[in-house]
Length: 187
Image (cartoon, rainbow, N blue to C red; front, side):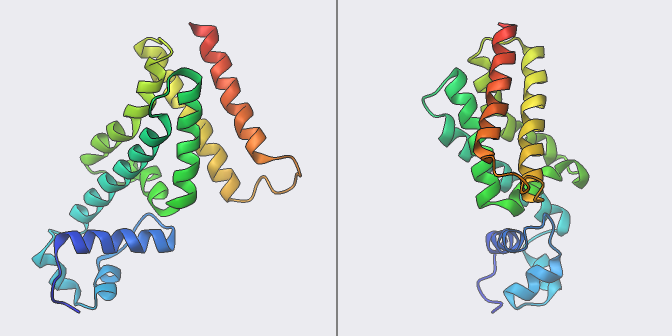
């Protein structure tokens, strides 16, 4: 292949590999093999693995944020909070590799991690604002909500919920209702 290689092609190839493997990391060697070029040729377009990881993080954050915004568009309060929960569920289903990238942001020690976290968090804070919570309560609830979502999705993926015939969606909805009930107790 070789000809027509660009920074964007390298980034999208890495993202494609992440999505295929459902693994948060790729090597430059893997990307080069997929592009049918030698690894050193990548350096004509990117500075190295750190830059590639930064680009992947921001891409992943934007895809999740877009999914969140799609689910909360035109909604506030309870409906919007349901939207956040179901946006994450859809994102994990359709982009498990990118979800894993996001869950590993802090391990990468990249300055863009804070930027990515802001991109991801903005829709949730918009929803929490619609409940009229103060800043401190919003931070607490954002942590609680993301912990519930991640815990549920990761345990589901790991097969921890396969021993019961009880509908998983009902359990997920109960978790959302518990958060809403708690928030309503605060306002």
